[in-house]
Image (cartoon, helix red, strand yellow):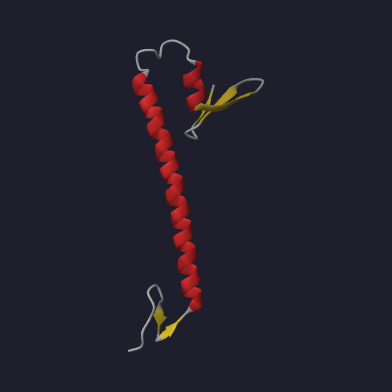
Length: 92
């Protein structure tokens, strides 16, 4: 049996370059997705920590809290939409 370098695939006895490139692209996409999810998890942890530290002060308006959780507010003639940084939208 011939030596096959680590990471190579043999299909019917032939190493296919297309399969190697496809797997490398999938691996890269997964690494990017993992980094993105890691950043989102860090952001969620920061928000949870902030809310826990300020749970007794939530009855008052806090500009800091608003800026931490709200991405933007869109105002229309008959309603407005609040877009949170967690990608949740609320129509009022």
